[in-house]
Image (cartoon, rainbow over all chains, first blue to last red; front, side, top):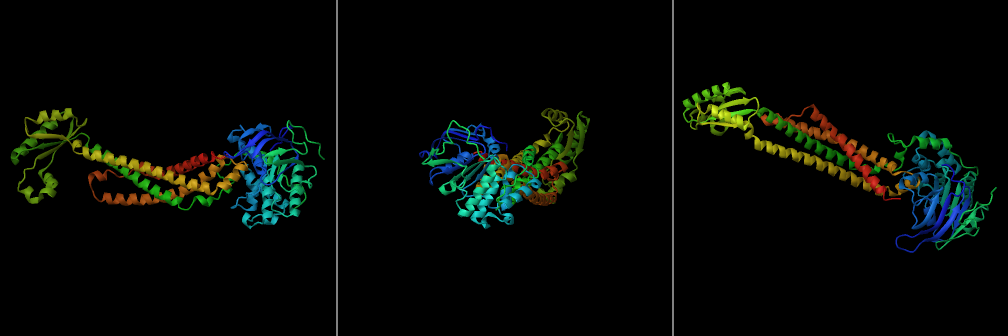
Length: 242
Length: 318
């Protein structure tokens, strides 16, 4: 889980994506993401945000173009090397995607178990993480008995437990009240301060103002615009941050 | 929810985990990945039935093989000489002379003139006591001889030439030629047993394949999540492999017990027949050990099938 190269953590070059024979849902997407930055991906529903994120967290291969992740060509990456890259990513899915037969504790422990961390080494970090997201008293609860907000926090805890280099969150505040949304953003900021690059997809424009240091990626009908100029390709270093 | 920085898992813990690699034996970590009960249900019982049938078929095949070997061993070098002569006195004198000639021949290690009483007992089930005692039907005199180097066409010819002078109507036959059709039938039954064992192995594999596919379908969402969290195909395959392995071990033990009960029961029933061919079909220690290894082979086959099925299915996913 080391940091990416000092250049960019993600690089998209002229990427296009279509499902089957339909028209492209993403067209000519080119951008770079830099280590330790905080990005918002905005756009109306159906703009292609989730599709772009699926490319980012290696759930989908593009129809064309080039994607480099942590300095490696992700398109030609052999299948057996994908798990190593995925372990450097943290993903908060829009629909949480918690494993229904596992408790909150075991859901959060899942990335560590997948990485082969022994039981004796994972109990404390998982308990601490659940306490950090305010679910210390819900550790043994199954997802079905958790509220939407609680499930979301479990999903976030699961995404960040392995200290990912890149955290990708798809509408992480979509199912919570505004107060909880701000709290969740603070969690992402805290993680970002530890060095994780964060990409948060949201259609809530009010959320963008809550993280003033963030950079904006805007998607409109599958095309990416760069209102802050921070995403231009070839890459440049982002502005220095506090 | 706290505003403090998130708890940090020590890098050494993660690095240590990578260095240790996957834990393949206990599987404590991996057992959490998919629900373990989903693969159970009827699977152990299906495997138990398959193993029981395999044990019975294999035991039958081995017993038939032993019977054939024992009979062949007993008949090796065996020659029967029939003195076909209507006059009882002439028949007896020719038989005694032929027996004497045989004893003098090189390569003949044993000669026995079968007594009339013994011949009478042999044919009594067909002719009854009256017919035999009253010589209503002339019965040939029999000489049972054993050759050191087996009964070949050449040795049988030599015997015929040698006794022709003293018993011109003698008929010389190798004992093994009488049982040739029986050996042929036994061989066919052995092939049938092998075919049955093979078919049962295929059926077990097919049952495992269907069960694993069903479990993969049921757990598809979980598997996709595990994949996206960095789980490998081999890691997921091990979960299914271990689960089906436990099912197969339990089912195999039950199947072996069932199969052995049937084999022992049938063995006792056949032993009660007291027929020579059947008596040679008893199983030795090695054969019993082979039967005990069938469930072990079943576990290996089931686990291997499960692994192949899971790996092939997962390879279609990104």
